[in-house]
Image (cartoon, rainbow, N blue to C red; front, side, top):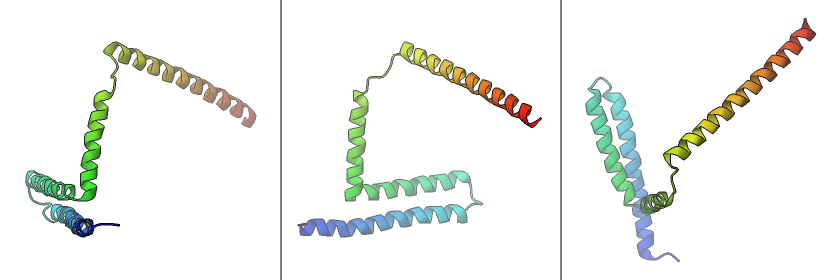
Length: 122
């Protein structure tokens, strides 16, 4: 069963998400309405509204879970063993050579099929 605090939080979460969507809608409509204004001012207004919307969204249960996901992803990225420069260059060269070989094979097959079809059609 949900506690009373959880139910109250979920009610406020709906209201918070509504405010977030209204802020986004106001940003889109405002950007269209003030299209003759300076791009700098419109971008600054959109960034400010985006920051306010993000802060409000992070106050919801889903927002907190998303923030936790980002933190966990950051920890996992630190665990990744990144290739050395030599490994990166070797792998890149292998991929480029393989793509060229396959492209040449496809070109050859296309030319052969084209030659056969043109021989049949006349």
